Structure formats: structure tokens, C-alpha cells
Length: 155
Image (cartoon, rainbow, N blue to C red; front, top):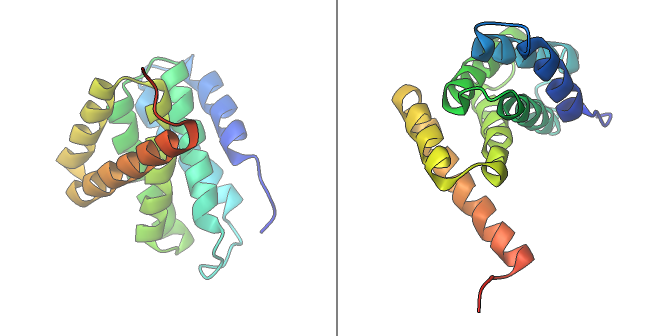
């Protein structure tokens, strides 16, 4: 599959549109969905690379929400809903779509406090209990990887 800069494109599109709207979480999720519908239009379900496109688009979308100071927890829930719709419309595996979306969403952890990460997980749990467990596992895995790469800090 051809390499796309989906995350950067999505971040720019979402940021510019969100600055002008009232219901910004819904708009952001809809933009991410539209990006996915275009980017994955002719991708066969058997292509192993399409979940990475979903991850990239959701990472761009959640980063744009952060830049526009939008409620990230509500935004994450909206992203999960919109990617589920995209999976249905594209006839792609909804679980793989959700997994890609969660990987993109969890990336925001680098920029927010632990309290906000917990709030994000709690909001996801209200709507998607299984996804919240996967989010927690991804968060932990990423945290351990970050520590492994950067090493422990302190005296």
C-alpha cells in the first residue's frame, strides 16, 4: 500500500475546520471518517496495511482536537463511533478498525496529564467497555516502550 501522510493531512483539515464550528467533536470525527473513506476506498480487506492508515488518521484527528482545546474524551468516543461507521461503509473488519483507531488515539498520552488520560479511558469505558480495556493495555505498552527507549529518569 502506498505511503500516505494521513495523520498530518487529517490534523490540518480538522484543525482548520474546528476553529469555525460549534459542535467540534462531531465535526472532527466526521472529517476523520471522510478521510478514511477516501484513503481506504479501494483497499481490499485482506491488505495488512490499512489499520495503520486508520491509526494515522485518528492520531491526526485527536492531535487536532488537542490543538483546538476540545474535550478529548468526548472526541475519542466520537472517533470510535465514526471509525465503526467507516468500517461498515467500507466493508472492513470493525475490530481491526477499532484497534487502529485506539492506537491513534492513545498517542495523545504524550501531550496530556495522567488525570486526562484516565478521564479519556473512563469516557471510552462508558460507551465501549472492551475498547477501554484495550486502550488501557495500549497505554501501558506505550508507556513501557517510552521508558525503555528513554530510560528511567531521576537520581
